[in-house]
View 1: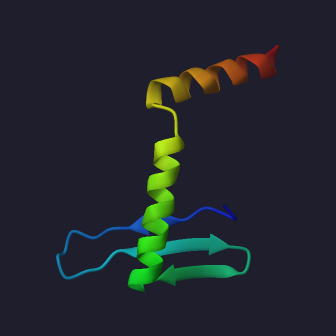
View 2: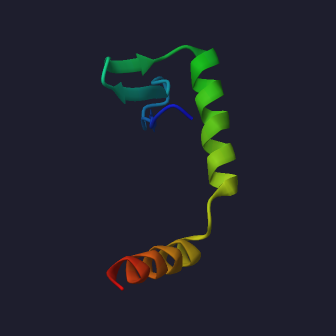
Length: 69
């Protein structure tokens, strides 16, 4: 993945999601259904790969401990 992004979701039923990408070249707001669908798929893939919160905390603590040693 080239960089980070955020999917902005709104409570209003008439408001579509927007994908926000911040880069050195500037900010992008993607509103097409194709872009929203693509980034929603990327997000779901990343979420499936991520550790559960408790394991994430343990990993961060272990690495921080190793860096302090």
